[in-house]
Length: 328
Image (cartoon, rainbow, N blue to C red; front, side, top):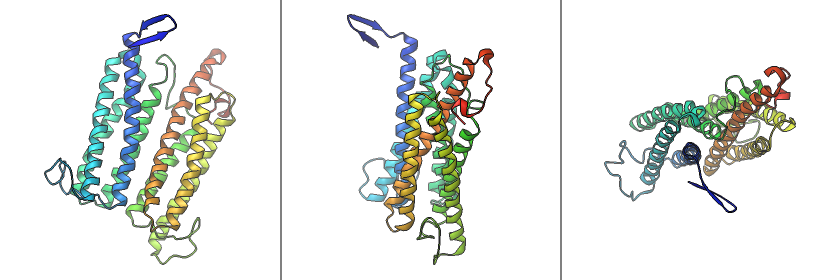
């Protein structure tokens, strides 16, 4: 690969070229994974999950599918195959990059393990005729996979010689925001697979509903989780915006996260009030996946920023309040 400067043409060192491929593949994997989750939601919303009764082939065929439901399901499988190829290529690129990508090696290898689990769950879901439990687990592992792929993509842009730690870098608010947001996904999966989407026609409270009390309770638990998760995510992102030491990239992602959260709440309300319009449910999950990816990205950047600022303190001390580290 060549770098061009005025009057000068230089060749990019092989080590940096390998890291460049790691970054390209990690971003491609992240985009493909997000698209896979959105397409998977469309498969669920259109009741196309059993469009192909066999696995891995669709009724023994891999060619064009003539009817809608098999086409949706087979398209989902093709995209899943592409994501699998990308994640394997990324793992190979990370290993070939050696020390230049040693900080990416952990999340890249974890993503390989998670995609294997996801493939097995996908097969079980089809063979179990879309049993609610397997469908819910399939979505939750997909969400976890999106989080791991996001970590891989963000860390690939962190200098390999910069000290950072996901375990010790982020503050309590950062951890609380990420955990709470994942719990929102869990409660949302229970709502969908429990058939409670239309249990409450009003929003945000459920004043009256003809649905069974059990379904209403599931819906209210999810809304309560959304409230708690939203407060924790806002607290995390706003504290980062208020910090003087947050860089421009962190601030941009934090603002994007707040905008996505607002959009997600609006679409969630429309999905509850207009439950007959299933497209709202698809958009709702798409915004949720985007919000999850952005919050995880800010979480990783806060780990990097906290450790870097701690190194700048005389004696390497990381003392001080969480807010002073921009990740409170």
